Image (cartoon, rainbow, N blue to C red; front, side, top):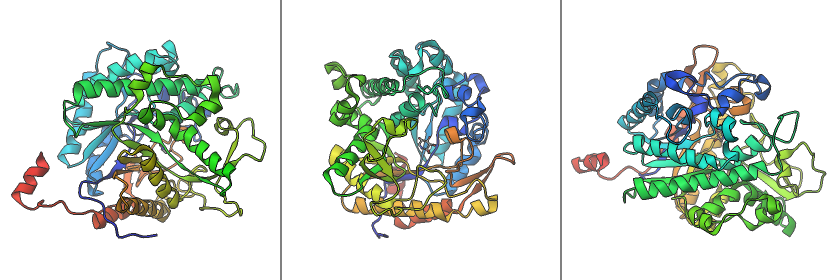
Length: 496
Ligand code: NOJ
C-alpha cells in the first residue's frame, strides 16, 4: 500500500552501523581485543570462517564514507563506540585512550560538518575480552561498575558533539545468542558441542538483568550529570522488536503472540518503562528470572527517553502443536509457542530473503508501531530496519547493485511508517540497516545488509546499490521542507 503522508521537516533519516562490524583495525592505536576479536578467530564459529579483523575498513575510510553517506541525502547516522578502543583495560579507573578519543572526535566532527546528526551507541556487543576472562563479562555485576565508568569517559569526551545516545544495543539478542544458543560471542551454551561452559537454562536471564541495571545506571548518571537541562539531550535503550501475529483468532493463538512479544521485546522494554518484567515472562521463567529489588525497580523504571527499536520482520504465532526440537534453544525459551512464515492455510506470508529469519512483511511493522505506542506512550525511533536479498552474496557485483528486493522492503516499510505518523503515532526517526555491507556476526561477511556494496576481494571498495538512491528519493519527495530555511533567520536557526 502506498501513502501520500509526508515526514515532518525534523524527521531523522539515515543509516546505522556498529563498531565491531565496520571498523576493522583491531589492534590500532592501543585498542585491546574485544570478545568478537577473540571469538571470531575460531573459524568454526563463523559461517564463512572469516574474522572480524577487516570489517569494512571504516577506521581508515571514514572520511570517504561520510562523503558517500552525505550523497545519500541523510541527516542522521547511527554508529557505536568501541569500549576496548576507548578504555583498553575495560576497567573502572582504567586509562582513557587519547588516540581513540581523538579518532572518534574527528569522525563526529566530520559528520556534523556535513549536517549529519550522530546517534551514538555506547555498547554494541564488543566489550573488552579481558572482562570476560576476569569475571565472566555480563554474568557478573562487576560489569555494571565498569560500564558506568566507560560511559562516563564517553559522555565527558563526546558529550559536546552528541545529543542522542543509545546505551546498549539489543540486549535481548545479545543475551540469547551470547549465553543461551551460543551462536555469538562470548558463545556460552549448555550444548557441549558448541561450548565447553555455559548453562542455557539461566545465564541469558542473569545477563539480561545485568544489562538492564547497567543501562539504567548509566541513564541516571547521564540525566544527573550530563543532560544539564538540555531537552535535546536524550538517551534510550535499543530493543530488538519483531512482530508476532496470532495465527488465528483463537484465544490460544492470541495468548501465544502476546507471549512472543513479552519474552522477546517486553523482557527489556517493560522494565525500562514500567519498572518490572512482564508477568508472562515471570510465569515462564519462574525462579530462574532474577527479581528487581524495590530500589532497582525505581532505578529501571522510566529509564528511557523514547522507545528505540530494531525491527526486521513478522512471524505468525500459535501455541505449539509439534514436538520441540531439543537443539532449538532459541524456541526453547518459550517452548509453548511456534513461529512460522506460513499462515493458517499454509500460505507463505512473504517470499524468502537472504537469511532464514527475515522476510518482507510491512503490515506487521504497522501493527507493531500501533502496539508500541499504545503500550508505552513514548515517542518511537527506528534504530534499525533492513534485509538481505536472496543470493546476494553469490551473484556478481554488477547484479548485486540492482537490489530491487531491498528497495521493495524499504519503501513498503517506510510507507507503513508514514501511514502511522499520519494517524498520530509519534515516530521521529528512521535509521536503515545498514550503510554498507559489513560483518554480520556469525554469518561473517556472507550476509550483505548494506545499501553500499563492499568488494571484499578488491580493497574494500564501495559501490552504491540502487537502494541507496531509491531511499534518498523516497525521503526527498516526502519530507516537508524546513520553514524559513532559505532566509537569514532560517539559516541562523539551523546553526543553533
Ligand atoms: C541487529 C544488530 O543490531 C546488528 O548488529 C545486525 O547486524 C543486524 N541486526 C542484522 O542482523
